[in-house]
Amino acid sequence: MKAGVMTEAVAPRLAPTQAGPPVRRGRATAGAGRLAALLVSPTLLVLTVVVLYPTLMAVKESLYGAKGLDPATGFISDTEPFVGLGNYAEIFGEAGARFWNAFWNTTFFTVVTVGLETVIGVAMALIMHRAFRGRALVRAGILVPWAVPTAISGLLWRWIFNSDGVANALLGQQILWTTEGFHAKVAVIVAEVWKTAPFIGLLVLAGLQVIPKEVYEAARMDGARPVRQFWHITLPLVKPALLVAVLFRCMDALRMFDLPYILVGAQKHSVETLSMLAQNEASNVRFGPASAYAVILFLYVFLIALAFVRLLGADLVGGGPGGRRRGKGVAA
Image 1: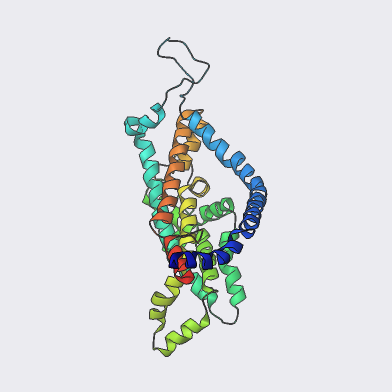
Image 2 (image 1 turned 120 degrees about the horizontal axis):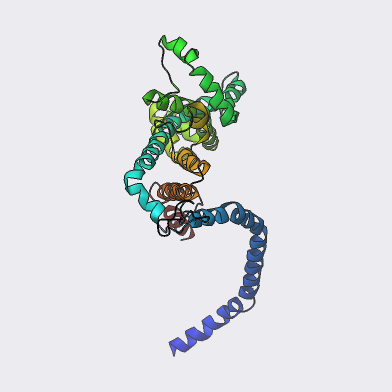
């Protein structure tokens, strides 16, 4: 009896909700989805042409060897023989010494340069964020190195690190920076940090400018010193922008080619990276190994980006687990 009365009382309230509005809402959602797909389709088409197609062609080319003597017939082959995963297997043999040297050079340059750029970039952002006379001039001066093309930067630092250049004049020693050795690595690191540290500083500055001033005023009233404010207020609030900047710089540093190529030169054991190795193989008409190195570099960059997004909490789309929990809390 009570159940019947409750059903009759609730039914009139539910009837208007179930009729009409969901259909219109569904049509509006479908229309918005079609419009979004239409607007995004040119970008997807461009990405398919300039990213997906070259990647698939590189994977296909990496399965073929170089033209030359066919060991099965003893004749010169006019076509590239199919070798399967042979180009990838070579990196674990005697011929892989050059690959692993380039791999560790790439990793070393990425870790060292991005680490130094992060520290220097955050310091630059803190300086540019402060209010003082001539701040606009300081900001322009800090951003100039990042605006200089990499090829021009390489030529500039090649002149600085020349045997009779500015670097040796300041140190009072005769160091051949652009030859083999650890000093060649130092030259590349200095030039790379000088050029790209302002990039991290620019993104961190954008994060600093959205932090409310009331947060710092409250911290000062509670007796927090500047160092404590930096570690407990500035760094946590600027973390999303900083992680995005570090992610972009890691992806860029892993593909390093033009700066060491111009500053030190090609086929230098001390500074040869994976990109330089792939280019050298391609220039010697060894397109199969070159494509294999390029595919490995692509996977390396992809794994680093995935590690940032999954492990370090770089929430690039605003839909991380923490965001969902906060959204549910607000809705509740």
